Length: 638
Image (cartoon, rainbow, N blue to C red; front, top):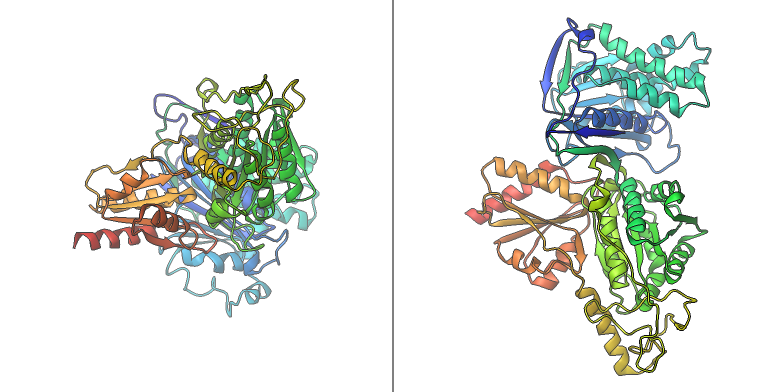
């Protein structure tokens, strides 16, 4: 779904204005955070995604945070089985999915108990009363029904809605059984929230009919449930206030809602087109990276080949083999898969072939937290191979930034003939935001010049005779006449590429490979310091961009200057990074690990970085980083 924005503002307005005249007070808001929560089988991800799509089509800026268990079907009605979807939408530029929800939709007692502490006092709580049975209450440790005492009503705006009963009633003439009818209660919730926030309905109804086109009775049931939720809000006296959030003022262009994994896939498609090379994805499904495979498999018409291999090692082997054959090889995985792929990454370092390794990080170690986010693979990306095995490292900062990060990874891999590790994470991969669709004419030219003739003084082909500027070796497609050559994992003699065990040659080649990576041209890091008076710099990478940026905004509003620098290139670092760090009295480094970037900055630049870490499987909240930055700034000022 795309939205065209012209003259700096999104089109549209509140849908069905005339239908709502006289129904109650309409309150205008600049931003809202909604969290849908229920069992992993209640369809909370679909519900949140549909509300997100309508917010995007309406022209709001938005950011989302899905949160779901790793099990395919977690135990019903239990705390570990709770699935939630949080959406932040606004009429201005926002950076995060929000710290806490303004509205919590709880489909059962487990969802209520797991999420109620995040709801601020005075927040709106909408509860599906049908699930508050004695059995379900006992499952999550409620001794009494919290809906029957005053504990909730004294703290929140509580709306008790028998969603299952109302849904079943709305579908009684469809011929569906009670159990099947009840499954549509998530669409009832979506309809109610769509009414509350003046969201359009046509897109959701069209989506439901397309999604269930082969089951028209199910499609119609979901549409009826959606309309029932809308009509309930329209007719009940329980909801006296509805809310409007105007479209955001965005740069002119065409936008679409996009997740990080989809943006990565599109970036890879663009890289293949801009380089003129076939792109081969050799991979093995793993959470949370599998959607990259799913999306790329849809685009064979762009010269994309996807191979689901039998394991991680076979996947990267196929990708590296494709690069040897003259394609752009890509493999995708998460932290455990990177460990398995490490030997082949080392082979790519030795053979000096372009290869993109996408690591969508998750909580670890081992299987860890498959569906939760973390940033703990940075040191593995830097050093997780035998020997001196340097690679380039790139990290996107948000879902939409994944498109550009994929193109940048491809540029580095192709120009410098090197593996590039692209470090995304679960928050970026599954989160979504508006993406300004670029003009194809503005995309970088990634055209590759293959070796076509002998290059050595003796009239033969030397596979390790390097470009003096990039230190990249020539890339010869196997079978090219006169360019017979041999490559492999054994050490190479400089220039000729012959196997060499000479100590001096090995020393030279190790240093040469490192010098090639160190010499990669990357943009200078930019510093956001509006006042120019900051004495504290906060440095981040990856998905910490949003929370850090939001926290910096809050701190500045309190009258405390702070600077923010965010790193896309983690190896090599931008050339101006040392000078930037030296300009500030204190450097704070928030990370979702135990201080891996801080360790690298301390080692390279001898800066006394203040490390602030979190490894809970959840992103930072802006409010917690605000407190950290405020304390550091006050300490510098005293």
